[in-house]
Amino acid sequence: MTIQDAEIIIVGGGLAGLAAAVSIARAGFDTIHLAPAAPPDRRTSALMMPSVDFLLRAGLIESPAAVGHPLTAIRIIDATNRLIRAPETLFESTEIGQPAFGWNFANAKLLERFGAAAPATGLSTRNAAVVAYHRENGLGHVSLADGTTLSAPLVVGADGKKSLIRSAAGITAREHAFGEAALVCDLELGRPIGNTSIEFHYPHGPFTLVPAGEKRANLVWIDEEKLLRETQAAGPEALLAALRTRSQNLFGSIALASPSFVFPLSVLSVAEAGRDGTVLVGESAHAFPPIGAQGLNLGLRDVADLVAVLAEADRSAPDWALTASTAYARRRSGDLQRTGGMVDALFRSLLAEMIPAQALRAGGLWALKLLPPLRRSAFGIGMGQRRA
Image 1 (cartoon, rainbow, N blue to C red):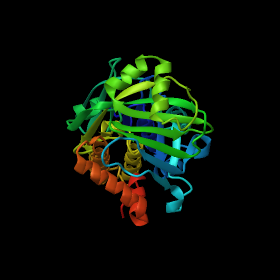
Image 2 (image 1 turned 180 degrees about the vertical axis):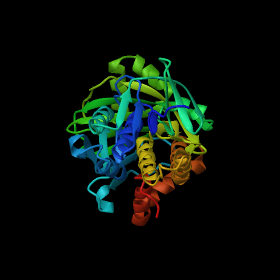
Image 3 (image 1 turned 30 degrees about the horizontal axis):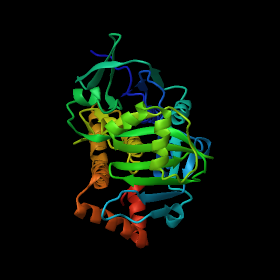
Image 4 (image 1 turned 60 degrees about the horizontal axis):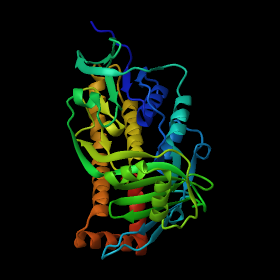
């Protein structure tokens, strides 16, 4: 008879995996977190207020102001030379009665805070790589690189786009790679952008400056991967010249405040986020281009729903993990479909060269600019607010 090592095993050491491990352990479940060592995460995440509220409720952070920078406005500038262009648009959080749309966080700081929130008991974290996974006799069995095997009724895959847990569980993923990539880095600007996220929309995607306090900004530049890599390889001065051009010289001098990194872009989705005692959170279940700040926000909604499902689980029942995985998949289905469809459609609309598509996009922004009720509805969708 196989011995159970924990109630829940979580595989993956990123933000979604660590948030799940700490939140679940704080909810009273005996948890093992398998988190292989990884390079420092130099990216940032813009978390909308529903996600920030979850972090506060779950005890993962004590105060957003101690970790991040508020986002109170979003400015969109159509920088294309297309025949039909969208109007420049400014959205302000005060329109929906909120002090901020959300907060911009450095991923490394969030990882540090999440780790500090871990309970003293009930959570065992191991720097261990998983090499195989299978289920037998009502338990998930996770094989490690050192030859040991750990077992638990419920296994959570938070191991990214190439998820071994997802593949071994037989959960099919659909993925489409784009020709575009994202270049990210931190910048020091000659003039501050305050609390406003500024998006210049170009033919191959947005060039976005996200406020990071004082004169700092986090850059997410989406463009053709070949162009981004060539610009990066040409050296800092060539990169800075490109950044000044893309930002239309609106912010005075620009200096690099961190190394730059280029990430290929793709979309990934699954038909079901859980089955047979296995559940998926974060990029093991969904991945998008960094449009509309949905990636980690959606991952944290995964974690929130998983915690809610587990709170209702009857752990005295021998099949509680199977029931929980089915309930989780059902609970996540609508949100994953809505958000995935919205981000995919938005990104493709930014790339569209056909005049009808350009007209629809421009008309949509005009409608958002001129119709407050429609604008408020769009805010709710973009912030990930739940439907009643």
